[in-house]
Image 1: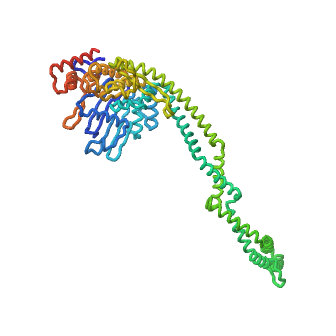
Image 2: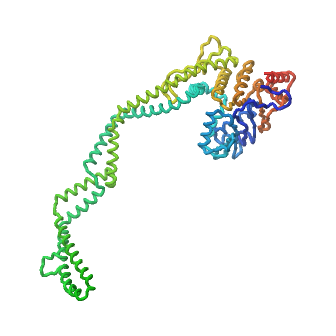
Image 3: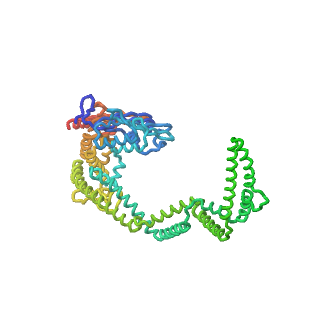
Length: 585
């Protein structure tokens, strides 16, 4: 790597890697409008404290779906704001490219043939927000999912988060490769299955007495409905009709006898019935039909009427034989109707609903009595689920332990290269209770001094040491996981002297395989950049400029070195030597 010492362009593209190419923001924080272009390799971002460097990181995070409230990030007085980020995805690792394609397809985004750029945009108003990828509206989570594929953003908060066991475990897993990636989702599924069965079993055992009472009551209801023998959904209506006939039997007999007598079965010989009168009418009509054949149809109609009258009278006579004057039958119907009404009050408004309730209760009782849902069966299923989970957790622990050995060796070497020659780094993988992430607690242990045993990273590492541990981890992760873009916010805080040189070289090494953006206050780190972006604030307005010439770089570096605007001879000599040294490496 060289930085040209003459007044030409300092940007040289060495690597075909995905990268962030352009950032535009409008009415965000204290910025009215700002555009920044980025290139491959290492870009350093410098500026006075409070100049607005952190706003660039804020804007990147917003473009990648970070949570935000419009009233907190909109510029004072503005009613709307916007962030746009352009990302070049050509050269993305195959597994990441596949995940990217699936994500875009999921949200109906189809890049044009040969198009490898993505435009991420986030719009804010005082009442709402909108997210887009290539102009297509997407949920905010879609941008966050993209961030996991394309960007690793380190802030000072992340340094502190490295103290957390869960973060240490996830960091170890990120270096575990495909084996860990394959096992973790299997462990999560097995854990949730075992947990669900365990909770059911615990509830069943805790509520055993209540469960038995419920079963007994359910059995009583089913038995009551079965004994009722209810099959006909209109039985209650049929019973009421029969009851009405029985209760009015005498009246029905009297009336039907009277009608039958009038039609054909008149017991009084002095009175002609309808049938008698019709037969008398038949004789003259028959004689007339002999003279005039056209009357034959009329004669046939009259004969049919005589037959129908006699048939109706016979039906009424048969009906009379079916009418019973039986007080016992009346009482039986009254009792049956009483049973049916009670069933409707308890199990449904109609007999149809009562029958459906019977079927439902019988099915529920059968399920309760099913041996597959018994406490014994559930306990067996729970035991089998735990055995499966245990096997997966053991396999995952073995992968983590093997990864821990490799991480210990590689990170120790990284720390030695970062001016910690006596550093000891260890990874402890210890068994713990089941979780969705396995049954392991991962603890990073560290010692910077010879003879001192390694202790928990959170207890012994200083700020500068912790930054170097994180930088070493990022170096290994970048190599293993091919993260396209890494952003470091003041990773060099708390270090000085030769340590700064080591950190600068390490960041430079990372930039050989990924795009790296670094916010720094260290002139040595700033001098190693392939590109230099200067952030300034004047009269409340934030501006960004790309420093493409040696004099511009020297001026910016001198401000970092001395904290003053101008360059005296000693500072000029220092920054000139610094740039020449970097050019020669």
